[in-house]
Structure formats: C-alpha cells, structure tokens
Image (cartoon, rainbow, N blue to C red; front, side, top):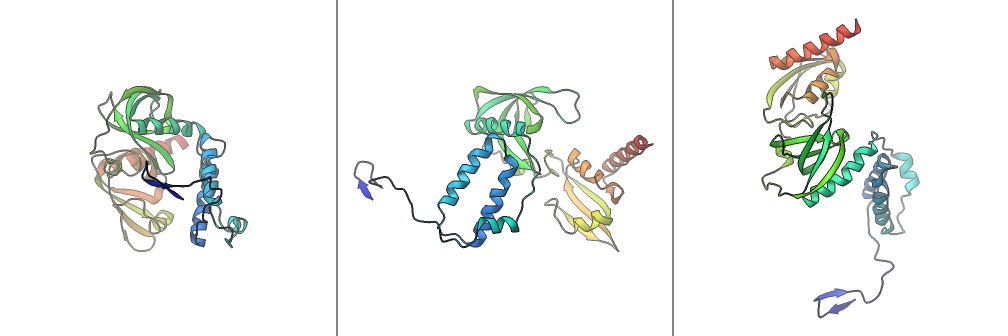
Length: 269
C-alpha cells in the first residue's frame, strides 16, 4: 500500500488476488443461506444471474476455515416462495431505472375489475414489495394524484425523456399508513370483525396490521379491531374466511360483505 500525493489517498501498488477473509458467525451463514434460497423464485429471469453473481462474491470472501457446510444447512432449511411472473420482473428493471433517474413513464394499466387497460402517464416515486407482490407508487399526471400500480397489470411500458423532481415530503410509509395492504387510503375507519374457528386462532398468532387490536371472548371467538381504509384488499381478506369472519362495523362494509356472500350463494345455486 502506498500514498498518492496527487489524489491524497492510499492505493494498492499492484493487483490483489486475495483479500483478508471475512469473519462470519454461524447465524450469519444461516441468514445468507436463506437469502440464497430466496433467489430460486427469480430463476429464468434477468435478475437471477446478477443476484447469483453478487451472492457468489460474498461467499468467495469467506474464510476457508468455516466449519458449517452448505449441504448440511440446505438439508435443514428450505424456502418455498410464490412464483414471481417474469413479465413483472422485466418491468421491475425498467421501472427501477426510471425511478432512480427521475424519468416519467407511460404504460397501459389493466385495473383490477376493469374490462380493458387504460393508458397512464406516471412520475415513478417508489417501488415496494407488498405481500410478495411488486407495486409502483407514483404521481398519476392524468388524475393529478399519487396512485399505486401492481407491476403484473402493467403492459406496453415506455420510459420517457421527460424528467421530474420527487417531492421531498413524499414518504411511502405515510402513503400506505391507513391501508390494509397495497391499496392507498387517506380515510382510515374503525373496523370491527368477529372471528371464530380457525380465523380466530390464527389472528391470535400473527399480526396483519400495525393498528391491530384483538380481544378474546369465550371459546374460539375473538374481536379484531383495525383502523384502516375500506379497500378491496380488506374485503378480500374478510371474504377469504367465509362464515368465520363477520363484520360488526362499519355498516357500509358489513353490507358489502353480506352482498358478496349473497352473490356467491346465488352462483352456487
């Protein structure tokens, strides 16, 4: 190592083939294994190769005296993620670049429940993984408001030359604070749901929202209280429990869930 009087810094005088080994604990090795297993969901996509190469560089830096074998760890731990559509990842790459470069984008967006896609022009602010799905958070120039877009519903994506400045006040956590999951909501309401059976047992074991409050009643009966927007993903979660989830309030949400169950019953008849 020598000092450069011009650049005022130290540098290597010749190529370095082997750097000092990185000391890691068994717990850190296990964490890296989980990360490596997570790569499997990106197999056969443009992301897999770059992430695999980055992971290999980390492993190469480890000390050869590590006593934990990858094979034994692989036999002890597995990772079974949901399949990530390759089209979603292709959009992810271009949208990530546009977000970092502050470039506007155009795309056709097929909104859930709509009959056909609509052309949108958006200033991409942020990309977030919510419930194992990728979403774009950006300012919709046509609607004049921040919107959330599921990457799998985006097609005909085009990055424009027009640049923009992201507001310093923008915060994705603030945008989704009142949301149950991915649908943005600026009007959170008090929601109360009566859960029974399996739904009651599972809600005692996991936290589905930061505002969650659970009060256990007799037997397998609990009251779940949330402060969230009345969004489609909240309704889908309630409906997924069938008769084991009954909305107590608010009344409009209770009515919509009842109507959904009535339509389902009619379809089965």
